[in-house]
Length: 81
Image (cartoon, rainbow, N blue to C red; front, top):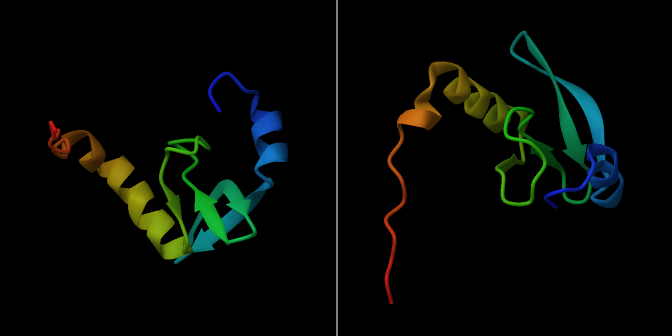
């Protein structure tokens, strides 16, 4: 989906913009209905980006962004076959 406009991605993948509230925090993000999946508003809507099935998981991921934990994690080992 690289090189596609945001509007085209939203239309083709049937994403809609929603406001999610979890434990007093409010964030604007994207939701796909079948199956119900939330996209990280920081990572984006690319197919290879993380997506979450619950508001709780989305907010834990956003906290990881805020704390910088995603920058500090180790890379997955490369496998040579």
